[in-house]
Amino acid sequence: GENVEQHPSTLSVQEGDSAVIKCTYSDSASNYFPWYKQELGKRPQLIIDIRSNVGEKKDQRIAVTLNKTAKHFSLHITETQPEDSAVYFCAARGGRYKLSFGAGTTVTVRA
Amino acid sequence: DGGITQSPKYLFRKEGQNVTLSCEQNLNHDAMYWYRQDPGQGLRLIYYSQIVNDFQKGDIAEGYSVSREKKESFPLTVTSAQKNPTAFYLCASSISGTGDSEQFFGPGTRLTVL
Image (tube, rainbow over all chains, first blue to last red; front, side, top):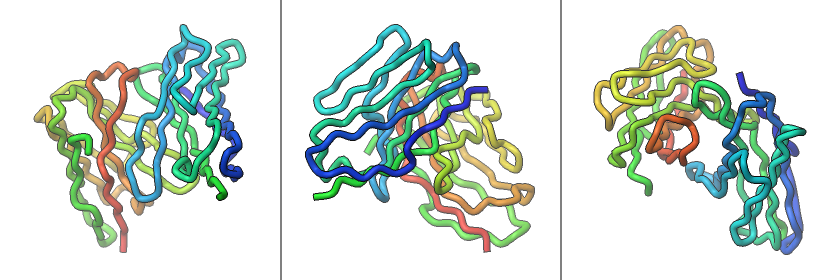
């Protein structure tokens, strides 16, 4: 089955700086890669996703890049703000139409 | 907040007992999922259902059982065969079962085995 690895596990950034989270996947047939954000005490919510026919996607301060050859994808957050503090999960859709999630990255934005 | 609910919020169980976690959605979604969340391990899929009256095992199905008799409901039973059931359980639903549509999560149930 699909195996997703996510790095780093924790990330501390100064407010206004950028944050980058990287994920790798194992199944070359995977074609859908969402990112979920889980704030403390809340449920995970989708923030952005990318499909395998696209190399990059942006939505305001967040962007995701995909390198199918290397089987990795990354989340970029620019101009970080305190409300960006949360746990971020990457995921990949492999076989059997199910998502496999990474272990998560705890992002802390320092004021 | 998304139309998907879980109950109870907290659940305590004695060893050897089966417990059932409730998950209901009013989003008219075809697919529903159960995940287990442990610190440092992300979200691990227990069972999923792409359509009513059908379900498949996820990555960690041992010691769990589900049913999908109604489109709106996908209860999860944690049996006494589950060796380490203390965890946070999240239910989710999506409009289709193809795995490439947004999943909407419930608020979760925290299960503690005493």
